Image (cartoon, helix red, strand yellow):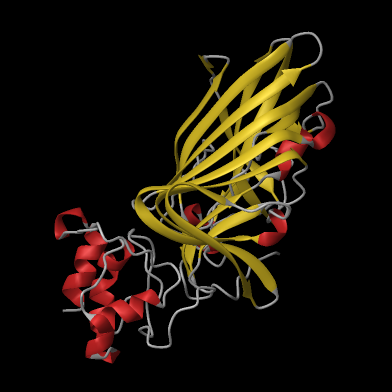
Length: 382
């Protein structure tokens, strides 16, 4: 028997759902087999990830694909790994991911229908899209004798075997000769866990299945409208050019965490953009809150040192362990995230040492614009 063990996340409920780019598949009976498309090239892709305060990220992908031959039908697929260590998410026999909403695909102006399924998957590897017989593959939520198994595992008693599973979305795309436009959107419940207030994984590699394995023109946009977000991306995926702040307030830098280099980005009502020509996606990436790598002052409170406006996971602070000065810092974080310039010299000096702080002399934040979590924060640390 096989049991998934997640040592780092032991005793902590964590939601993680790997989100994939649209790949190309061949239909073989009931199987969806990943293939390399040779006639259709991906000329342009604009990937926009919008971070909100409601715990969701909105994903918007715009494709321009060129069919170099006669019109043809292509099966396109999208995979989202099942949440693990999360027993609040119900298991879906229909293959509908519990943390994906508003899934939509529009091709050449027409909205496409899609199908769902539960498929075999390998941890952090692409699925073979082999549909599972859910009469024999059982989830622990349906069988109390399987309670020791992780929430992203199915067990086959007849085979005395288990497998990780994923939720598959797939649709038929009718390509015309020449240029075709596909617009794919959905909302995704962000992950969280130890040292991560939010996290958005994204699989770029499926895009390499189009002709030549290259995206002719690739743009990644990360937006934080009407909010402030501080996050990091692996530098190894984005070498060759830097992120540029296109709108609003923002700053970027490279930071080291142990032996890895990250691109650290702070945004307030802003957009960060990365662009590459003839991009060959050889790796995936995860956009994650910058909790672990941000360089906070040693005076920062011992718990809850990273500040985020949303109601994502965060350990309950032991308020009794905070000094009066630390409590004052905590209840002023909502103001600092909006760029408020403090008249109190000690507070002003403290926040100016925090890299993500971007002072704005015009900022006049009020309680009416704070999120529910921010209001609780202010009340708790009075």
